Image (cartoon, rainbow, N blue to C red; front, side, top):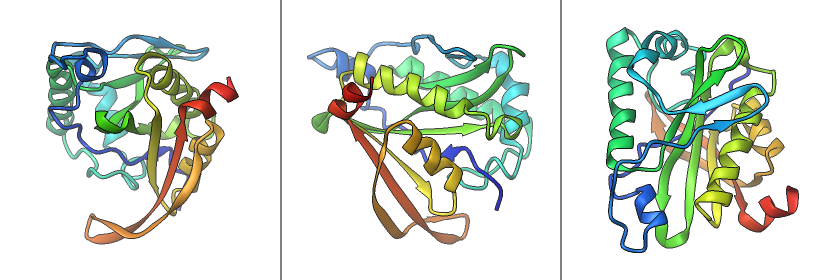
Length: 212
């Protein structure tokens, strides 16, 4: 199988909000994700105008091979995704970012939080990247920016990720960013008609601080 720059991510629950992390009372409010900038990328909130860019990568079967969702068959699928992610912002949930390539100005993928458990100060991270940008260190760059947000801004104790065992490139991305392999979950998820074996990786705040 080809290289895959994607990690599994689940839909965030409505109760898993930025407000619940940043406010002692956990009062939900509309929160757009902060803009995160790296050498080659800008991570920003998705917009309705990103439709064509999202469809370009999400309709690629190779890009969608190791994620939980099916490839987008029509632009309506991409429009529904954008509606969902903008709804995340309106509900104040832990955000997803569009990954913008500075050179082209186009959205070439997404990265964001999935499952969030405030009681344990931990969250899952997931991502997907357009195929022309695989193998160029783009996702590692984006992931380091999000880890900085997770540990430096949200003050999470742990960030973790899951990837299909055959998705070796994604595991390398995670390990390059400092996440450690914690184990393998056999036949853990039933996705696209088959049971998937999943690699689990994680990082705690002291490891992030030590690596800075």
